[in-house]
Image (cartoon, rainbow, N blue to C red; front, side):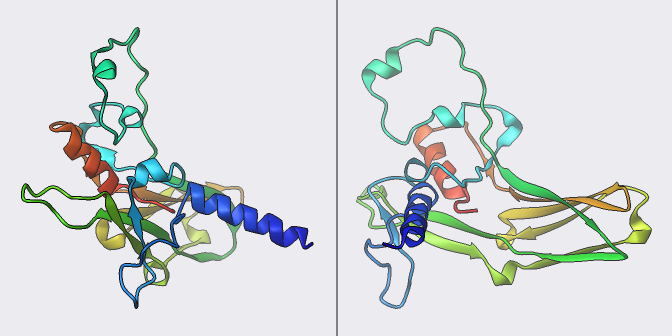
Amino acid sequence: MDYAEKRNGLVDWLRKQLIGPGNEKKQLIGSESDEVILQGISPLDRYPTGVLFPVIRGEEGLDPASISDEEETEETSKAEPVEKPRRYMPPSSVGFSFFACGERVRFQVRCIAVQYKRTGERDEHGRFRKIEYERIKLGGDKETTTVSATVHQLKKQFTQRCYVFDGLAGIDVVWRPFSDGWIVTVSLFNRQEWNVEGDPKSFKQERNDKSLFEV
């Protein structure tokens, strides 16, 4: 038995279950497409990891982590909380830092993500008949960005910013002088805003539509 192959297979399976896509054997959107449809469950209920949530408009409203896409039961809706829950802000950005030095530091940033859009037939009231989401790939080689800094810029910190995924997200590259080089922080952030006011069903759907997966 090849234990390395089995171990890598398990890691790959866990990644697909937690991050996605874990339903690649489901119905294909088209015979010439490798895209799949997520069926019977919303993306945020299916994939709990590797998600960048939209920014809460005005940074006010309900705790997004406490909102489920399932309908509330009568017992739950009538129950009064013993104490006010702590406010939780779900992550809307991800990044990493590293040290670099040289006369001219230059590198490329390549980002990839996935977006899910509600799809399927609607009834006479305009509501979807089934829970189905189309998986849409974002980024890749076309989103490659080149950034650079020279030794002459070591006197102060500065930031380079660009927008990706047709403006849905952005990349920040922060250069901080350190010793004879830079501490460089590269971040990918979700630019979309999520309005938590109004109809609960509407902002649940908006949260799924504007979240970025598999980042």
